[in-house]
Length: 468
Image 1 (tube, helix red, strand yellow):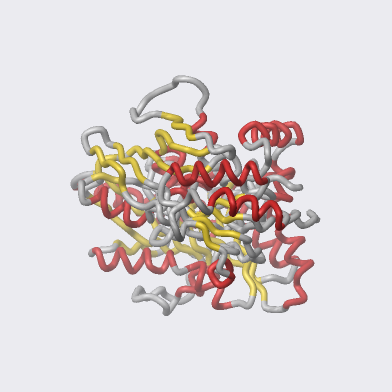
Image 2 (cartoon, helix red, strand yellow; image 1 turned 90 degrees about the vertical axis):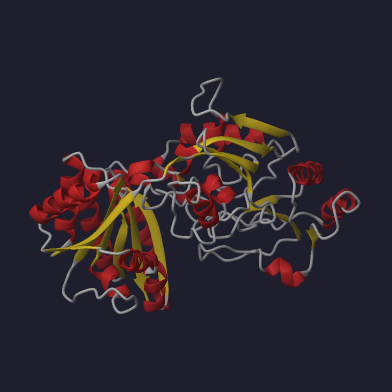
């Protein structure tokens, strides 16, 4: 178990206040106790930690000034976006200063001809979707928290979502970033063009670094033409094995749905009756699939995909005939996590990912682990890319040790099947102790050296990704 991180001394905090107070606009630096409490946690469920200071800058120059002063005073800095992370990445473990980018909002430049957009980190993802779609353009990443998560946080965690199987995760759409190092140095890395191979791919390194290497203050994103047609269907199966066979059959036939979401019986039960869509009784698994493209070919492909699902065991395929029906189906998928949380006193959701061929074995293994430890279980997720959300559920507060064993077993299962302990949520705080299950000591040591190079004072998001 890691020891608590030491908090900065009163003298260090005062040094930081003295350095920043006269140089920042009024209201950027705050220490109101009631306000600080709202910045101590995120959506991971991990215990919050109270920061000593809060900074909410509006410009890159202010971020640079804050980081330079924090580095000089040796005050830890926890970068923060919308606080929607699921791995504890925004929790200020050592207190210090929370650096919230929430006021750095909006689009800087949208270039439809070049298929690019430059955005500030505090922009909400759903608002970006609306803005680019008004120009008949498309930004594919769509994590479940899209109505509240920030682009900067998406980049910092390399967020995914249901469309990742076809279009990739956030990193696949980031062309370049403006970032500020721990000492206040402002860098522009990457490019504005769709292609470019000059030097090391520092953009790719910063994407997914969870605020441990630099603070991102601007992002250049690649856009695509907006698909003119989207078809959505829900396939019901007698069990999760048949549903998993359906996923493999669709993929092997050369079809790449833009979403292919799997739900097991417990997940279906959790949302039944909570949406306008009437989920039938008795079905043990479902696949929510969506195809996009242009013209009648999309609907024709949907017919072929539905037939493949039927051959794999689907006994019913329902096609959404209107936008409202599509919204009903996706509404059910998006309330899965909160519905499971409402149904049980305690819930842990792990976002493991495995190769597509290993999906059936993984689902079977998850249920076996839960049964062995006396826990309830629900599995759903982005089956199109093998990213499964394994939810462990329990009501007895005395189940702590059983839960700990189950979590380790889940990660060992995923890695043993050639997969990973996190498909899209990141390592952060909650998974840092399990990273050695997947990565060798030499690989972890190399990453620690990279961290030391970018942040020699060790002030950026300490205690995240690597065990202390």
